[in-house]
Length: 298
Image (cartoon, one colour):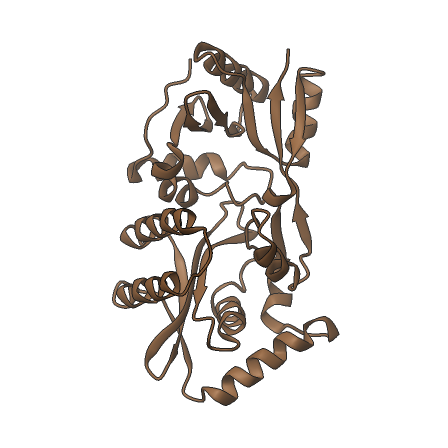
């Protein structure tokens, strides 16, 4: 039987231990990501034996994470199926990457169908490449940075701390005010997650950086490492769009100053948004991590 509860900061320690065994670089496999979005997605978590399991959604629209940890994987999946059926909903497991898809196929032959949404694929890059931006493919990126430095000679990079978090929040508000599209609800939900992240920045183990021009914060980014030690996940990145090269330089400077110990950086999904997809593709991902929804059909 699975006993779900709302995530609390005190759960981070045991969840992190489970996530060390996650055989994937999916952006979902961090506790900070689960915690800061919990209110938006009605997330609940469960400690089943040595597995971490998350459940999201409302009413009939419920989905589960894979059981992440070590032990009897098939047993943990069976518990997900039983929990879902006890709620009268079809069992659905979200975020199934290729390795776990094979495990499900072998353990539950013919009992799941797999649905892909390319808007949910993670864009993963080698940190060395993102730090150097070398070669012909990144000629335009280097030009953006050159122009930024020329136009803003007094720029500087610094780490995010409790002292400059309020300035990052003010920048995010300015970014919101500059939006002229119809995604206001999504932006509000994101801002709530950002506020939760900043309020619990140290406790969640977040790492971030910002760029100043004339003493004012014009760009920031933050995220957290996966527990496998190989990959860092960038959760948020915001900059003043009227300043040419602001996004490019915060990306490069944060990578150069903070991420050199990681082999990869996961910059999450494009959500099927054309502008976001174009921006992520412009950095030429080394891995496009496909994720599937496993739907139980037995």
